[in-house]
Length: 136
Image 1 (cartoon, rainbow, N blue to C red):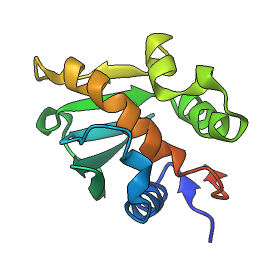
Image 2 (image 1 turned 60 degrees about the horizontal axis):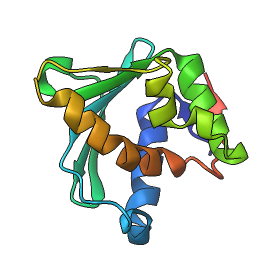
Image 3 (image 1 turned 90 degrees about the vertical axis):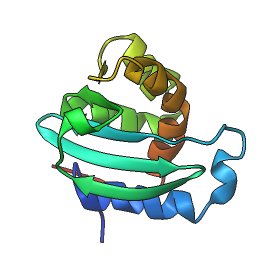
């Protein structure tokens, strides 16, 4: 069954794929982020512990998170579709730099942690490559 984007099932599929591929983060430092991915009005909480994704939950409170990467669904769709084509301009760091996605944080260190975690999040999102994603 193809995961629907945006949904907790989609992000859980990424978590499972990432955890089944421990080598995917070997080139990155470990991440200890408790963050959110806001797709339009939908918030998904993702927790990284070391080199794995330990939790994905739909909903939550942004104030409890280290940071949130937020943007409209169409920008997230571009990021996912850009994985197949290798479009570097559609990577999470590039979309943040273009201000198509924003970093939100109540924590003064949140912006730095987000910047440090974006490559890890890109690897996480990269596991959508090859999934037959249905866009809602």
